[in-house]
View 1: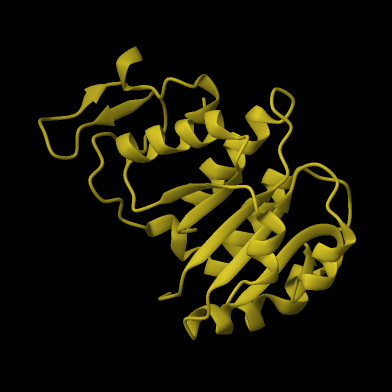
View 2: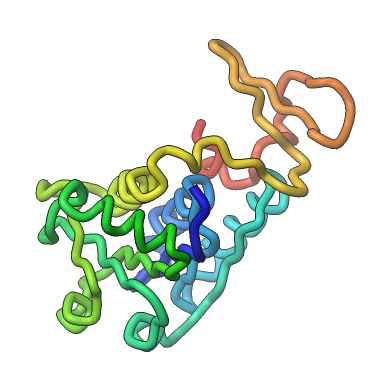
Length: 199
């Protein structure tokens, strides 16, 4: 599916406590079809990890650090989606959102960290719950993006990658897509952050 820009906004970050979760929001956004992620300006470590993974495993994908997260949402030129377990069900609006994306309307997806202010609920065009049961914000983002892109994001081609994982029933194999034959993965093929390669 051809679509316009999809940006994920990580709203709020507590250094130390949220480092891993914020990093995984960025990695999930990249892996499942978003074009960029905006982190709070105190999430520099997470931004570095996502940029390093993008350099090695391909893009395009961009990472920004911004202090004015509420202003980003309030002044977004396009559709604003806030993911929350209290929102309307994804299945009731997914086709409408796909239509908007197909019409090249930019979409901002807000993923909360610390408590999200009520103003965000009011700013959003859609408050959406992938389930109305307690769940991880990373899981919510993954389900939302897969529904938005209808699975097409899984067939994406990655540009300028220096590493590519070859799917295997057992074992691990990573190649240099611009280089020689495939080799069994070595420690040097893995992202420096052990949380970022999906184990």
